Length: 306
Image (cartoon, rainbow, N blue to C red; front, top):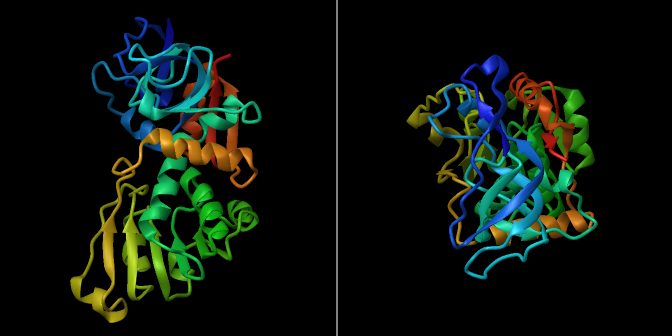
């Protein structure tokens, strides 16, 4: 079958190749991929791809072979999935605990934009605790996670200050419920009960300086790829009794299937709106990767295989 293969050259990161058909385990279904989404994290991995690794964690399509153990969606079911890898292909094996059914009113292109960014946002909001009436600072808000998180948190009653690289990109965040958009953390007026930080570098210390006493900073990424330096004593100048928590979206007491079903239901009922900045045939995947790396698109890049 056809699949996207890493080239090792980030200027043209993937190319079509022929690979063996997937060999599913008993608890895996084979999905014919109709669309997939490119995540920024995958673009980093493509700089120095591991031998044998193929990208692809966000897919949507139709089950062409149900799991041998009888669990999960039946053959012919439309699904959205979150495989560990290899989803940029005509077909991929996906554990049933990472698949959710799609209703007719949610198309595959929209669904493919949900898994990684949507799961991260949903679980991050859970980690932050109750947000109704609380002031929340969100850095790196113009990415896929930021759009989902802004809409989910505002829908739960949070007052969100979103940090976006440009006012132009911030317009959409305001439409999704952000109270305020600033172009730099230093321009945000605290204190904030919750800081959701994904940039690293100087962004995290600046966010920490705006944390309210007893507040919570959740560190869920380092998009700048710049290490963070913290002065322990600065922490006590403002955030007395505050805490810093590291977040990993893969750690949860709920399955991907359960949380994907939540996201699908929110999309189907008009309460969550995936932001797709680029939608193209999968032959343009390398171009989409470059666009994501250079931040030339807003939201998700979705490639359509059929």
